[in-house]
Image 1 (cartoon, one colour):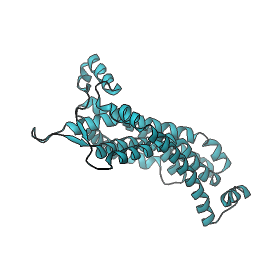
Image 2: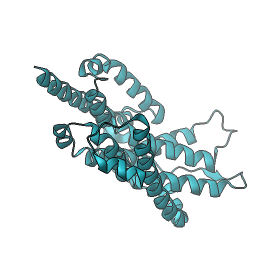
Image 3: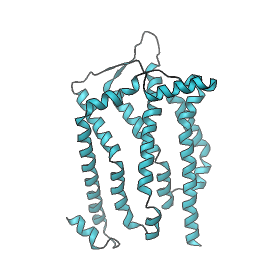
Image 4: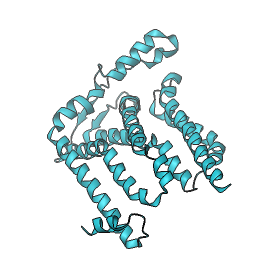
Amino acid sequence: MAKESIEQSNPKQEMSFFEHIEVLRWHFFRAFIAVAIAACVIFLYHKQIFDTVLFGLLDDDFPTYRLLCYLSQQSSFLEGLCMQGINVTIQNVDVAGQFAAATKLSILGGLIVTFPYVFWEFWRFVKPGLHDVEVQKSSTVIFWSSLLFLIGCLFGYFIMAPFSIGFLSTFTLSDKVENQLNLANYISFLNTSVLACGIVFELPIISYFLSKVGLLTPEFMRSHRKEAVVANLILSAIVTPGDVSSQLIVALPIFILYEVSIFISARVNKHHVQEWT
């Protein structure tokens, strides 16, 4: 209850470093409890989730494959998009491999499900240090950060993962080598793809906060636009089969996010200039 007394005494009062640490510790604790509860619920239904979600993208009737094949039939430019299910064998070679995979899935799923609350706890810690005007203008940050994170996770699952796993699992050095995926490696790769895309889609929110504290400017982002474009194209070429249309599907959202981030950074910096003049 010490934390409550610290926060309620005077939210605008200057606190010592250790009081800040105490408050932050309680925010982390509540966020951890929320993730743990969601993870336990997901663990109870891990078999259904594995069959329908994690292993679902290996089947021919996965929504992404059906949509890509439909688009490839509508245009000759998109004819290389059609993908079939990933025909690989997933094996477990560890005694506790399946239990560990279920645990990792539960933790990641719990983090994704409770992300709005986790971010809200972070926002509650940062909020007292902002001016009233800044709080009012940033009141929708939780909604937008949660929405962008969810869209990023969906992009990672429905777009990034099928392209990358489909390409990498069928790439062979020789016909004498058969690809058999390890369960732990498959789960880790899928989790990384989904979570990484969720974080990448937070780029506008990250640029907002960095611009607020003066660590990022639109001039810096514009001057490094070419490097960002090249890095994006290289990443798209790595995770896709190699045709132009599939590369554009993966690269285009990140292009848009980068440009939106420049716009946000410019608005924040313009507001700061107006305050100082």
